[in-house]
Image (cartoon, rainbow, N blue to C red):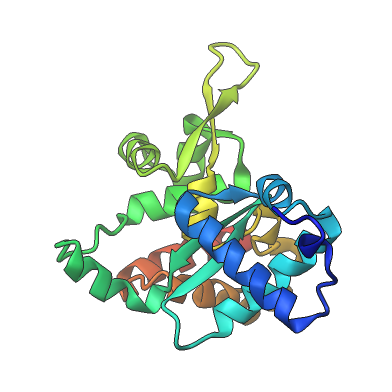
Length: 220
């Protein structure tokens, strides 16, 4: 590898285009999330250089309406994924004619875990007012939540938290990007924020109503 080439300034258009091409190839071959450090090591460039490169590439790629691929960031990793609006065609190709939606109970439980984690199953049930065994099982099976330790109380019950798959599913770089409920003074603004996020997942009207009701409960 010619290190001199890889140290050229990002401001030079030809170099930027070349780097974009290299990074796309890396993400395609990796398939799974590729860490920021791995990209730095392969390109043999500084962290500041790669950070600027990836920010520019994400903006460029995600705005390209001719492309069916976009790049998302999850914590300190990057991944190439398909655009949500093409999901129906992908399901046709993969012979999955029906979308495996989350039940009302699972959606409510997922919202509780997202905002209250780490949390035990008993604490989830206290908030919902009903048993959560099946919902927790479903969310763990779909890798949206996971065991994240034990609570230091008698019986040491399991604590649950969201996963990187949860972040990828909702296209969140980190949990810090979840809407901060304390900052929403106007209920309509809060609901609009949640609705916009749910639209990305192509949830049914029934599912959207369910999770919006849960969000309203958090506001009270």
